[in-house]
Amino acid sequence: MISIAHLSKTYASGHSALKDVSLDIRRGEIFALLGPNGAGKTTLISIVCGLVTPSAGTVSVDGHDIITDYRAARAKIGLVPQELTTDSFERVRDNVCFSRGLFGRPPDPAYIETLLRSLSLWEKRDALIRTLSGGMKRRLLIAKALSHQPEVLFLDEPTAGVDVELRRDMWNLVRTLREEGVTIILTTHYLEEAEEMADRVGVINHGELILVEDKAALMKKLGEKRLTLELSAPLAGVPDLLAPFDLALAPDGRELTYTYAAAKEGAPGERAGHPAVADLLRAVAASGIAVRDLRTRESSLEEIFVSLVRREP
Amino acid sequence: MNLRAIRAIYVFEMARTLRTLLQSVVSPVISTTLYFVVFGSAIGGHMADIEGVPYGAFLVPGLIMLTLLTQSVANASFAIYFPRFSGTIYEILSAPVSPLEIVTGYVGAAATKSVALGLIILATAALFTPLTILHPLWMLGFLVLTAVTFALLGFIIGIWADSFEKLQLIPMLVITPLTFLGGAFYSVEMLPPAWRTVTLFNPVLYLISGFRWSFFGLSDVSVEVSLAMTLGFLALCLVIVHFIFRTGYRMKS
Ligand SMILES: Nc1ncnc2c1ncn2[C@@H]1O[C@H](COP(=O)(O)OP(=O)(O)OP(=O)(O)O)[C@@H](O)[C@H]1O
Ligand SMILES: [Mg+2]
Image (cartoon, rainbow over all chains, first blue to last red; front, side, top):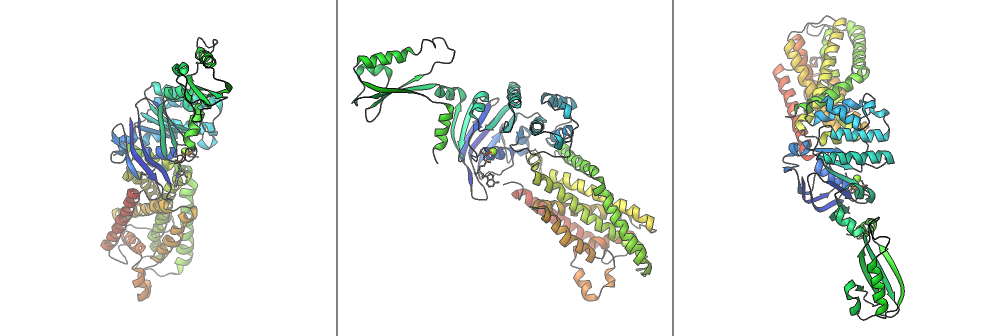
């Protein structure tokens, strides 16, 4: 749906905010762009939406280049910006209709009503925007972005400064939109959000896209456990008896590491523990290896993320 | 052509005018009335006719031009500066709207306002002094052309400005003086020859001269020259606006 190729952006300040980013967003998916402050998430979105001029590279939306064919490209996109930038003295409904007009769509009061109702803004339709609370303003921005029924929706940190209930509403809305076939790209600092919502996750740091993966694959990594045995005496090699466990021996020969899939919560057999672990321990005992200590470790998405972004460019 | 977008911007801007009716319409009318009272009635009573036109009537085109220029610039510059300042410009920039459509919406609304204002002032003036308009169509033509040109100039200023001070700077430092020195309140014939030559470099002179000609049939420079200069200035503004959008100057990083 969106095809980004070798995209770079260097701001006038000389700051290189994006470095050779290539990414394909599939039609109908929810894509979460994850990254710390200043990673380049907003810059990436801004380029696709026409707010920032790219320094190099190309972007197309449903086959339409964002520069040479900007009209067709932009008509498909709705953008909810990170900052709460709203007018002040306009009224809610007028402002949403204004947005629809900007995108060249004929007035459709019935649709606007449905939209406002679904965002719990219908009661406020005639209120001045400056009298809205922050959460309402964010919903207004969403209504404006959806006013022209876009095929792609960008949500730049939709849940920043939003309470738990509104966050849940927001997630539900995103799911509903996905069911309607809208492609959604959201940025977030929160892994939880990416985990909860996304079909695929991209991690961006220092302007580089360092990972793009299906959430399922990520969750598999997340579900990985490691059992490390600290040995009393260094081993020269893994004994044959332990070969089936595919163990990793530390270079100094003092640690054996066993990697296995953690049982899913509530999965059958959970109570029985991990037979493989028990087998391993028996096998270790049988091969006469003296174990000084052992530890297990669960890798979390958080950890994967932190280890990824810590790596300096 | 995204006509709906032009309409949306235009309606949005006109709604803003109606909301700030007092500021947008009433205050220029009041200040113009004051000019008439002071210059037209109080001082004008002691002034000789200028080429057969009573001074009070002679003032009218100049005063309308003064308002037209300052209001066109002020309206258009604020209209585009404010969304840049508040950040709501993101919506315009991300919409499937061409630069020409954006300019048409904003400049059209600003020009509409100032033309309406010019006509209101004309009507106000008619209460103070008997008026005849020899060439009403030319009069309207100059009114619209000048409003559009200076709304374009205002649009450029609103994009160039990065503070509210700068937004006021050009109108205060350039436009008002040029209007006062461009023969708003006198005929260039009344100046010593040396100053007359200097005045010919003032673009506003041509606007006022042409506009006054449409009222009384008399002018400082020929009406063709006036028209050509106005169109030339319009073309210059269009070129600058084109450049702004082509480079994204002060709108996109
Ligand atoms: N207009 C600009 N001029 C110069 N530098 C900029 C500009 N906009 C952003 N930057 C810089 O580019 C980098 C990326 O910014 P960006 O807003 O894309 O980050 P982000 O990932 O959205 O961060 P956050 O999570 O804080 O929103 C930052 O270092 C920022 O300072
Ligand atoms: Mg951001």
